[in-house]
Image (tube, rainbow, N blue to C red; front, side, top):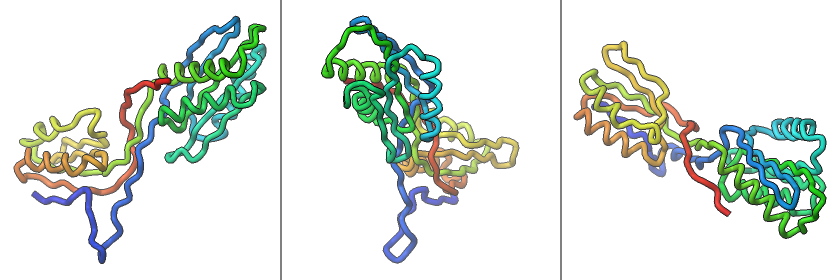
Length: 236
């Protein structure tokens, strides 16, 4: 088998070691929850966002469509390394709305995520402590309802195998361990291109080599982030 290690490690006099980037998680679809506390109505919404402009557009639209709401507090985190993080109380007591919403996003390890909470005031003051808990709970509820995905830093691997071994190799792949980039089945030797998480790529390639008994070629041709399903909930 023509074999190229997909996790090459260079010696001190060779090339630079492969860069490894951290995975990150984001909200995929908008989710909405609603609760009533002391006649005030709180509507929490989680959104996927890619930029400050996305955030400003969504918040602007929420304020237009909720003209009778007293507050539209929000928080968001952006970037592969969560390097942009902002929150806004929108008139609530300082630190009682934006900060607890932000904590919910941060605790869930999400990025490229905006959570906004629209409050229709019911005439009864809740006090800062209780208000903080409510905003946090509503944010957590929205995040728990939201479908999420994980962006995983992967090695891009090309596999060439015979038709005889094609089925055996395909059985090694599942939705949660590889991302299928491309499959070409009309050639004399089928070609499969996959994205494999960096931390498991060497193990998978070893399995492919064992399944094909050396009859094939495996090579790494690049790296990048790829989308994988993510399942978990945020807790208080």
